[in-house]
Length: 296
Length: 274
Image (cartoon, rainbow over all chains, first blue to last red; front, side, top):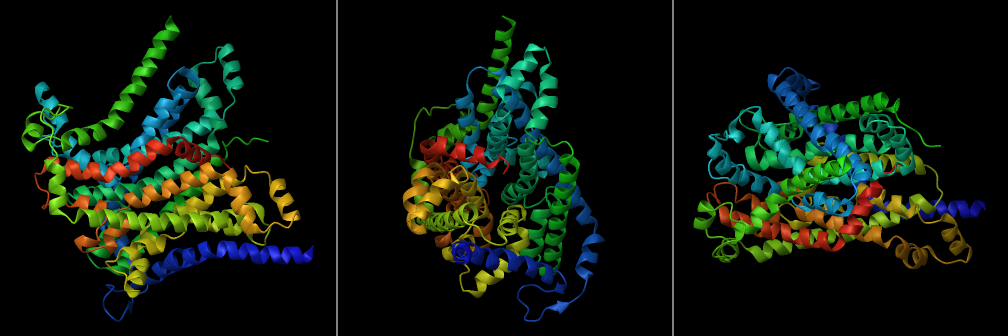
């Protein structure tokens, strides 16, 4: 028996090793190296890196731009959560328990944009929402409404770029939330309906708690992946402009690294965003965990 | 009667969302077959009055388009094959074998899904450059030969296979390679296929990493070529931009049409806790 255990240990190691090698070289080691680089003044080209201690972090934390970008990031998160977390939840409830027809069709249709490149999405929306020649503008003009040049309008630009990103993310999240919501036993809902419990209460007091495991997962990926997805429309459409009004933590890091060539500052930026992500996740877990419904 | 009214309202709501989501795709296809003149004057006309292939011809003329499509395919194919292999092996070990540190190793691997790419971007750029793979499609593929999402999705589906089945096979002294190939894979085939398709589509659409690595046009992937049509080089060529968009999205769309049931079911699994 002991021999089998040893054999199994060796075998498991061999099976996981290919993945582990890739992860070590291109994930774990770079992670450590980024932390290391954040303590240096460097531009990726100079042969010598200059140790500067916490200077890069001080530079970042005393720069107003950092706080502007942070504010933008939070706004992106809020919009993405409403469109890709709150809406899918409500719609999943309607589709699973209130609607009688169309489940298969809407699942397929909603997911479709998720397989298309966000570069394509960005380009299509740039033309669709073109303030002069786009189809939307041409309709609105009949009502005397002129579309603003959104890519140059502070504030508005974040909303539009979030919409473009949501076009891709929405269906993907919807499918996952839907499977969680459909996991709630039909009988429970039927029983509540017989007792004349309102749909609102069925949703908040039965559906939400009973699908919370899936809910938390989607909440997290909406934030973590959503912010990374937004990178593409930012890069393709605005390059962070106007005046950094559409930049977020992810884009700003890229900007520091590959436009400004401030490797140390960029590294410090990515360490900060990682801390923020981890902090958000921990907070969320602690806060939501109380309400999580556990099946026994 | 009241209930029927509500049903209609729900249907209208869902139909409206469907239209909003699918409109950009129809918009692109329809305008890619118009002349610039028709597109400018009749942007809402869905079926072109005088359909033309001129825009597509233009794309092939202006870009080394066959080469670019080939690059995109080669990267996506390589990444898919390697990710699938490494994920199958790792998922098998995580589900059916007992070993020390299993739980924590799995946790560490899976938590990398939540690390933003900016954290590894600079060192990976330095590594790939040091290997002389800058401006090379293999430099794009190399860091992506394994994938946490793949291990996660395949583990989820392998867990539905009874452990006793694998145990019996091992009692019969059937080797692990044969167990995986002849017993396990046929059982989890839908998940393996859809995970593979997802890898392929994601790589096909990838933008962030290739944009850092690839510099010259003949090494571009479709996403990068597409990006040129939004800046100076495309300028006002609206219909040509639509044609490139269509050529970029056609492959993922066809794959999705064929495998949609598999893909949707696999993703539906990913939210289930465990």
